[in-house]
Every structure is written in C-alpha cells, then in structure tokens.
Image 1 (cartoon, rainbow, N blue to C red):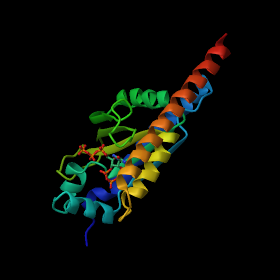
Image 2 (image 1 turned 135 degrees about the horizontal axis):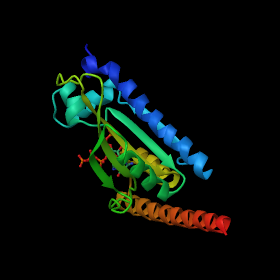
Image 3 (image 1 turned 60 degrees about the horizontal axis):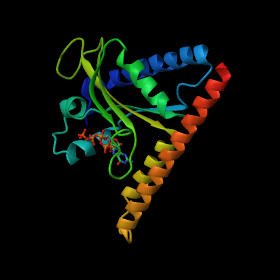
Image 4 (image 1 turned 180 degrees about the vertical axis):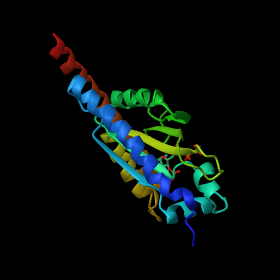
Length: 206
Ligand code: 0O2
C-alpha cells in the first residue's frame, strides 16, 4: 500500500527538523542572554500511517494525501514543555516572527481553560517550503501542529488522556470533577512557581 502522505512523505521529517533547529537556536540565544532555559523538553513526531488513516476514518475523510496533509493538520506535531507559563507566551511571540510561517490557527487554552481543566497553547502553523506539496505547488505549504504546555499542564494532560480511553469507569462524574480540581490545583502551583521565579529575578537585579 502507498503511503497516505504519497511522495510528500519524504519532506515531512525535513520540515520538522528545520523547525526544531530554529527553536533550538532561539533557546540557545535566550540562554546566552539570560542564563535561563526557554523550555525544558521538546517532543516531535510525524503522525504514523496507522494513526493518520484512523483519524481520516474518524473524521469521515477519504484516505488520501490531501486529507492527511491539508484537511487534517497534525501530520507534523511538536510539543514544547516549559518550566513556567510566561515561557509559553515568549515562545509563541518568537514563532510569530519566524519567516515563512503563517499562524493558521491559534487557541489559548491557558486563558480560556477547557471545561474539563485542560490547559495548553495550540498553534497550527502553515509553513512555506522549498518542497512540492500534495496539490502540486512547487513551493508547497505544510502544516505543523504545536502544543505548548508547562510541566504541570503536560503531566495532567498525559494522565487525563490515558483515563479518557478507560471504559466502564464507575462514577464518571466524580472522576471528571476530581480531574478538574486537580488541573486547577496544578494551575495554582504554576502561578506560584512563576511568582517565585519573578521574585528571584527581581532580587537578582537589585
Ligand atoms: P489526536 O488523536 O491526539 O491526534 P478543532 O477542530 O480545532 O475544533 P481539534 O482538532 O480537536 O478541534 O483541536 P484542538 O482542540 O486544538 O486539539 C488538538 C489536540 O490537543 C488533540 O488531538 C489532543 O492531542 C489535545 N487535546 C485537546 N483537548 C484535550 C483534552 O481535553 N485533553 C487532552 N489530554 N488532550 C487534549 P486530537 O485531535 O484529539 O487527536
């Protein structure tokens, strides 16, 4: 069977790597200027053939490269995990001024928290590349999904994601309520950690 990404498959890792290099360079410059880490870890992946075919099916889309690369926009995904909430906004501002990148979609689930407690900053980037795309454009455009979270937001999201797929849970309302409470407590810790960092930085400047 042909790849769902067709001949574009080969370009996906290159586009991902180019983006990662830009972010790593920004982090290195930030470290040089401030002696602080811009982020803690970065996870990147190309969505597997199997997951992409399942997602097309779930969304009622034909299993074509056009569905996989134009209708669904997370074939290339990057998750950036930061120590502090303000680093997320710093990275978003950095991405905003990157050349050849247009922010196609932006969702701030940190200021507009999802009802279940989910917090994260999501961007869908549309990147103009030197490679052809599935529509036959020579300088093709590709989407990259970026999720930015603090360590606390990420640990909550990972655990909630695992539990979401558990069937036959007793008293699901209680679980939902407890998960929301836990997310809010973690958000309060993030706020305290941010305040502590600001205090340390201020006293460092005195
Ligand atoms: P998968 O299987 O991870 O690829 P939209 O069409 O924009 O209205 P969409 O596409 O769901 O909605 O976008 P959104 O809300 O930005 O969510 C994109 C991804 O964020 C999701 O992937 C999840 O990985 C993550 N996410 C969003 N909400 C939650 C949540 O409540 N809990 C957790 N743990 N993760 C969440 P997909 O598309 O669901 O699928």
